[in-house]
Amino acid sequence: MGLFDMLGIGGTPEQRAGRLQKKLLEKFGPPENRQGAIEELGKLRSEAAIDALLLRYTIRVDPGITDDEEKQRVHAILLDSTDLALQPIKKFILTRDEIAWPLKALADLLPEPEVVQFLVELARKVGSEYSRVPEKKVLILHALGEHKSPDIAPAVLPFLEDMDDEVQIATAQVIVRQEGDVGREPLIQHLLKAQESSNARVREALAGLLADSTWDVKGYTPKVEAALPDAYKLDSKGHVIRKN
Image 1 (cartoon, rainbow, N blue to C red):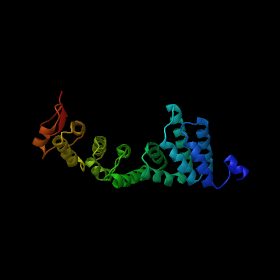
Image 2 (image 1 turned 90 degrees about the vertical axis):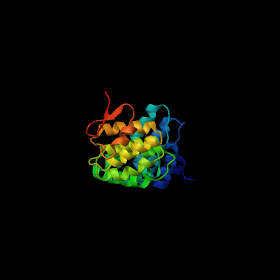
Image 3 (image 1 turned 90 degrees about the horizontal axis):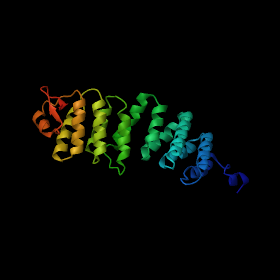
């Protein structure tokens, strides 16, 4: 082994990124080690280095302020890497669960139409898949909820059938934020389904979302009236409203 290898600065960019990655992921080591690795990886300017930097989002260290600062520094490096970072970020989002920061980076790097296109394709991929980490689906849905597009509601409808309440509620939130009425009947039907399954939490959330929407429930009036939680009722025009 040469002197540069012993010092950790020799070898190909991929080899250097691999060594620095180990330092980056030392949860209980001195923070200076991780922070130095972040800076060195940023200087490499390679996809291997970006892959390694993204892994910083898979661990949490104490204290929380240090964790946030290091993740924010990785975020800044990703933005500075522009096109070099795009493919690694997309790959990370597709294959990993810890996607909150990578989603933010993607939104900061791409024009909104391209962000929406990627998120819609991502939703179509994972919408009907079982996941042991429902939080990933919730993060995707929250990201989609920041945008409006005719492609969004159709793409997220399968999430309504997810086993997790949080996913179902997040899906409904996305749907009511979209223009048009593509999601009207699915949300009404899901409210009725929540009543049948005695899912009070989802039923309460859907009633509130319908009350905040401009949709009426015509065609389902008697069933919806029976399904509404006690705090809600229908007005004369068939809209869900909150009781005073």
